[in-house]
Amino acid sequence: MASRHRSRELAVQIVYQWELDPQSLIDPNVLDRFWKEQARSEDSNRPFFEFLVKGVANNLPMIDKTLQETLKNWKSSRVEKVDLAVLRVGLFELLYSDQDPQTDSPVVINEALEIAKKFGNSGSPGFINGILDALIKKRTPKRE
Image 1 (tube, rainbow, N blue to C red):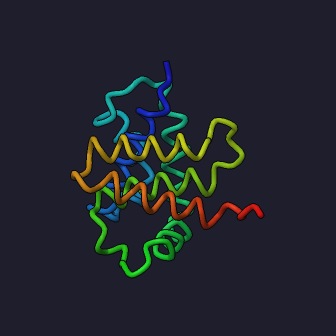
Image 2: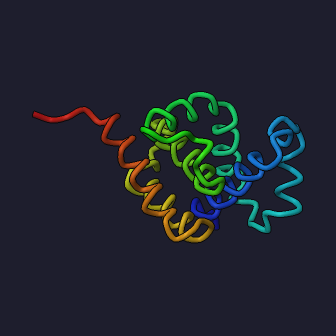
C-alpha cells in the first residue's frame, strides 16, 4: 500500500543528498540508484516520491527564492541542511501541488513537522512550522 508519508521522507532524504553532493542533482540515474540502494520501500510509493523529487529539482530556484523571502533576516545558507531539505519538499507541495486534490496545506505542514522530528534537531519542528505557516499566511488572501 502506498504511503505518501514514506514518499515524503524519501524525497527529503534525496533532497538532503543534493545539498551534500550537488552533482547528484544532475545525475540522470540518481533516482533509480537511490530507489534500489537506499529507499527500501514499496514500489507503490515511487510515483509520489518521484513527483516530489522532480518537482523540487525543476522548481528549485523559485522554491529557494520563496524560502529566502520568507526567512526574513536569515540567509538560507544558515539553515540546517536537514531543515532545508524538509522545507524545500514542503514548499514544493504547498506552492506547486494545487492540482493534486490530496494536497491539503495543514496535512503538508503536519507531514513536514513529523519528518523534521525524525531527522532534524529539537528545534527543527518549530522552525519549520514557523516558515511554512508564514508562507501560507502570505499566500492566503485576508478576509474582511
